[in-house]
Image (tube, rainbow, N blue to C red; front, side, top):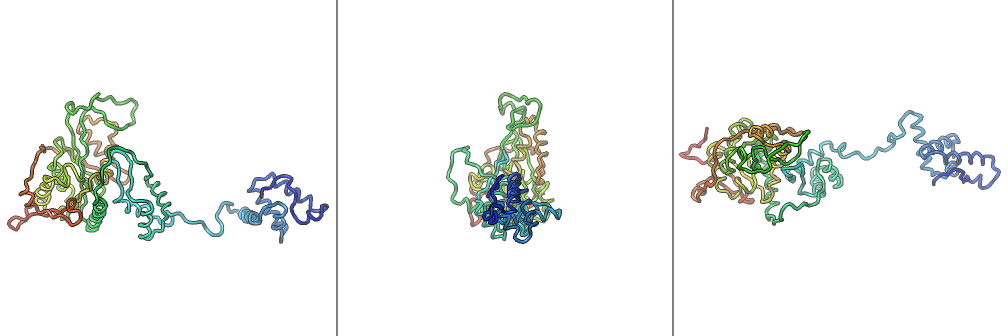
Length: 427
């Protein structure tokens, strides 16, 4: 009940006897109470009730109109003040611990659950998840972490995720019925290769870039805007660069081979072969198996015969590797790790800066780093890779290609072929 200046005493003695000797004292208490803020009221009443001794708390409650709990709280605060303890220090039973204090590793566990559920735009920092917060809460509970789905939302916000409305960029198309099955199988394959210590690489070809004084999307810090050519004509460019990216999932390392020819399966496989000869076999000296994550279309598409033929002849036969390929379903390329973990950071690194020379472009790629420890190597891949390579059905039948039982069009393993009982290994 609020206390105001001039409040009439509510004790039984004053009500029964208008000439009670303590009536004036009670009026002074109520007058002073009306001039004090709530925090000081509690302390003052606590002090008065302590001075009165037994029954003082009940009497002061009748005089001032404060409830017994408020006066008791004031006594606790007064005792803390007299002992030198901060008034706001927690007393009695402690409050509920935060999720971070209860589970210090909760973010890393949540990151593992989101590893196969996260997609991102390769040109921005936007990222999103396919799974709901309620299902994430259930998966955390299965791992022994009791986290409410509201708390999961808070953790996702702190980790850079947020709820977004749909933005229409292109006409919607129907998803494949095997989409979720393929994502689960991809997660299973990655877990198996990680447990075995075998390399996992995510590959894709970034969009072509005009080398010259042309406009590049994005902004950069500068005093004056950089003047570039009015039109972006390929004929006026020094060359057209095609970056082929390889992201080592286990080592968080990026490799980019930049060619100036066409984007063909031969170009993509040559880049992968160069990665193995220059870095892969050094990082994984005992590896005989390789998991390759690729998009469903383009030069490394699941239907491309030349892609599979080059993998057989150059990687499997030439290097003695057993290559397992898992393609992402159609229209799911942004879930490919190379897109959001490599290409997005490269694009942001040269945002707003014209790629005037090929060496400058390679320099921007090599200078790409992240707080999670990503480093990138970039090499100019020389050579001509013409379009139009055809592979006959007879040549396809001779490949040592074994489709998997799960989504066989998207998952297959290519093993080295033997000739005269000897393995043909390139140098």
